Length: 336
Length: 295
Image (cartoon, rainbow over all chains, first blue to last red; front, side, top):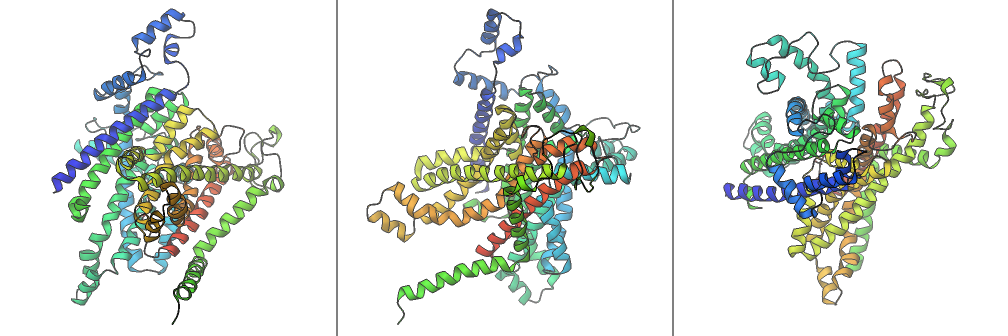
């Protein structure tokens, strides 16, 4: 049953992925200007522009061009950056680990703080803790992450000097040899605790700025679902059996209440990858957000489309994993 | 014996007023209504509330701290930040509402038609919807806005691009249950065509759900439009758009903190106001539902 569900979800994902590539292709066709003319330069003759157009296949009908685009995509070819003339795939490979580290840190923060606060908030409903947690999460949903990043940098870096403000490592710290590209893991592999600490400190402000919004959502979802589950029959039964409140909450209620939180976290991953574009620029974080923004500012379309395709692909895969996890944890889903 | 009407009518009336009372009993919802009411008033009366011309450059007045002549200080071109924020409220509110109107219209059309027709048409329309939902929202908005070219209108089109699928899904799921209701079957038995049934009998009943979702989403639409403004894809200078103001002011934060701080506060308060109303409405109409909404 589970296998059939997974296969069905995979097939759907493939259809959606095809659609996504089509939409991306359509966006690339929307771009103003003649790519052949752009590539040939302003002083090229009409004949050489025409030759380039044939060379790039731009003279063929768009369905053929789309199939061509799919072929290149399936080989991982995302074109070359107009600014650097390097393959976009290589550049994304260089920038992505920084974004992955930041996004994972933001999600970890959202779960590590959001779930306990949500649980406490539900258990002690209408207490001062509940009220402050709700205010805290209301603000978190409303605050623009890029603005929060600016303020955090201003207060904790410029004014108080407690935390580093920019980049992934301080100037005097040597980066550990790259294995995963994630500095925290790389430094642990070689046992360089100095680099680990420095990387961790550099992560704090960007992760808070990026993760606050998700933290707020995780808190709200956990609180709301736990409140709902606490009224269910099986929880009352557990109470009636004489179980202590603590084991009712942790043994029975929480397990069920956390399922929707899992979905939210999966969805958040995509939002965070988008939010990274905003937050990374504030903290000079060398990730794909900074890379994409550079592409946007210079209208470097292979870069913009490359980042869009890559991030969407990751988002699809993460959501697929979450759905499968969900189905594993909650058998009812498979029959839906 | 009481007739059916006499039983039904008072219940309906008291149900509505109960919802209304429940909305107004929650202090947070009332606070949200207050914020949005003030904001709307400010946006309407903006030309009379500004102290200075919001786009007039005066280099003698550069980067003045908040003070008597300029309650929120001035920016690097000597423009009054208070006046710019007031003028910007129009831009943001208009953007939020226009985006939502178009997103709801497209979503209702796609969701309503696909849900009512069913079959291959539904399958095709919903797969297209899924495709849009497969993108991380800001990333799609960014790509579309970049392809269309910089500017406020294009940024708004890009946000509509991202938003309509959520309404298509919402409306479709509502239509799926509503179309089996007895009054719909009765209308069909009387010979009403699908278009008439959909427009007259089915879609009006989806409106309360749509209103709740839209009231939550206006805030987010404003936030996303401001984000696009911040990365330079939205409103262009000299338009006093809040996100763009933060972007222009960020390099001055160290010495002139007021420059990027106040536009950000304006965004936060606006989004907060709409969220509070949306939350309150949702809880009042469906007390069971909690905070589990998408980001």
